[in-house]
Amino acid sequence: MNPGKDAGKNAGKDALLSAEPSAQLWQALCEGDETRAVALVRRALAAVGPAQGTSTGMSAGMSAGTAARERTRAAGERVLLELIAPAQRRLGLAWAADEITVAQEHAATVISERCIAAVADSTAPALAGPVLGRVLVSCVGGEWHALPARLVSEVLRLRGWRVDHLGAQVPTEHVVAHVRRTRAQAVLLSSSIPTLLPGAHNAINSCQGEGVRVLAGGAAFGPQGRYARMMRAEWAEDARGAAALLGRSPAPPVEAARPPDLDLPHLADQEYTMVCRTRLQLVKQAVADVEEGFPEMRRYSEYQRERTVEDIDHIVGHLATALYVNDSDLFTRFIGWTADVLAARDVPPWCLLPALDSLLNRLKDFPRAVGILTAARRLLDPPRSTRPI
Image 1 (tube, one colour):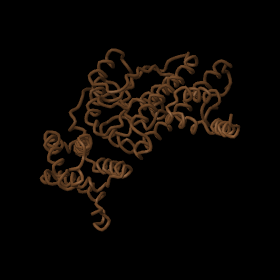
Image 2 (cartoon, one colour):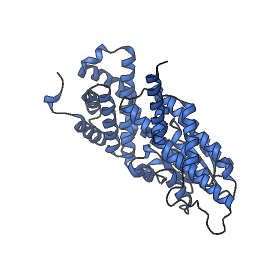
Image 3 (spheres, one colour):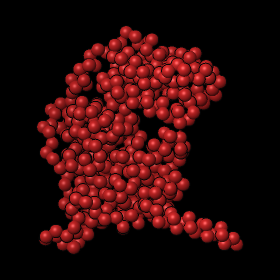
Image 4 (cartoon, helix red, strand yellow):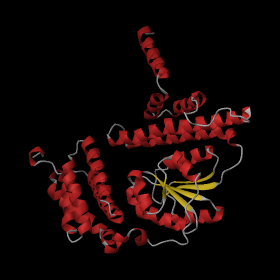
């Protein structure tokens, strides 16, 4: 036995147990320790009090049982939004900074889902009572980041709604069919991937064509939900915002689905359509031009080449989406994010320039595309003296 070693272990354990719950949960997620993460969440549920401004106390005429249920609901909401959700956002940032692997991020996300399930299980007895109405929560078609939608679903349940949570990658026709079958009062659509915006627009129009209100949320819809509003959806910044919107009177229902160009008249110039139609050719030419302008690529393995082709395809996809919503900021945000991800992996961000130049050359007769690509190029192009030789 080594007393000094054991003492060190115990000291480390005591430090962990005395740390803030958020730090403890983060460590459990990074270590892939599902048992510890779920236990931490259950302890937090028991310990957390109602947030300031949350109605959970004993008001006049409220029974002790009702007050206890309200406290349980409020505690569940706080654990979901103030403990689990921030940890999940931190995972995304850690992956982008190359601090954790894709496998670690996926494993941690699965554990986060188990933590959410633990909250749902622990708070279920407090959900007895009148139901405010029925809503449907779904990711748009192609969206695999399902955890934000799950968080919204659980918060709405705690607020008294009956929620049909459809999960990830739900085609629009299935969302509409479910609306018809259940007569849901609202559809909440979640997306974090900007290139899914055209499909999200179709989903919004299709659901509104059924006479149901649509709320949209997630990073795909842009800062302050600019693209959601452009597509005539109600913007829900977060789960609490969604609950607040559902408590208000909805806008008058739309009588029929609208073609996209009624909301986005700039689509009449056909630039978006032409980029979509020639996407494969654009990617193929850009790959060749990148190899010419970034000679290091010639030494890439087959795996590295495949990832490079995927990256260029993402660039073209985001360019098309920027044309769809007529916003160069969407493209420059993506290019800036990609440059940061590359830099974290010791890949010079300026290696993206040959791809942008290739697209500029091929799309020189498309004014909006040229403007978008030029703005992104200005973001990336460093002084010549700072480039490696």
